[in-house]
Length: 114
Length: 113
Image 1 (cartoon, rainbow over the protein chains, first blue to last red):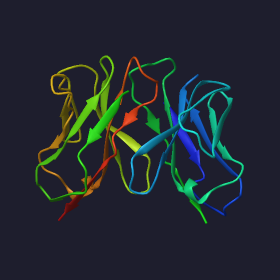
Image 2 (image 1 turned 90 degrees about the vertical axis):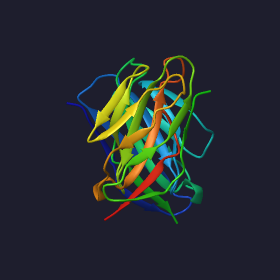
Image 3 (image 1 turned 180 degrees about the horizontal axis):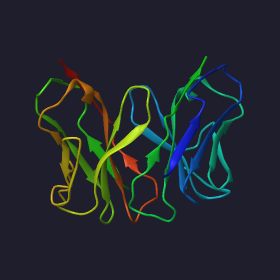
Image 4 (image 1 turned 90 degrees about the horizontal axis):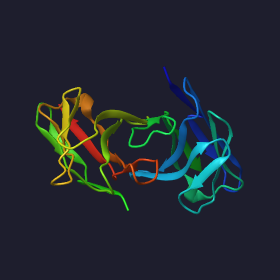
């Protein structure tokens, strides 16, 4: 069966520090991968999605970047964090080349920038 | 573009009350529709789905029917429990849009004993 791992679960970082959040998927090949952000008490905002290694689509201009160095690994990064980067970050995957299908989510990373 | 509109919360109910959370959508083509649930501090879990008009998705006592004529996918449960307290998200996946799901803003449900 497929599983998705996301870490760390919580993170407190000072303003101006770098960020690296990692997500890996097991039990499937060439998944579509997604990063979402959820601000406190708000809905989900799609940040990035990827349909293959090295293929990243950005949904909104921001202080963050994403990379997919391996088939089942998706990394969210920042060179210098802002206070506004605080939030709950969720990684998700959906099956290869599948359209019109559900996505499966990791447990999330709560990021607090201080 | 695609969009999902949910009723605003929080929705506060007593245990064993009837639940309805409204969801309407705008999409190109014939989307699949989903309800996700998020418990405090956790990721989203798929609750139920429907892939074509008049389909009824159901799980754990929750139901939602895909209504193409009203572009709606309302979530219902006949008798809620305290353990149902969570945030519920309606979402769609369009065959002609981007691959990622489009989510509503979420509805917080609080069930009191």
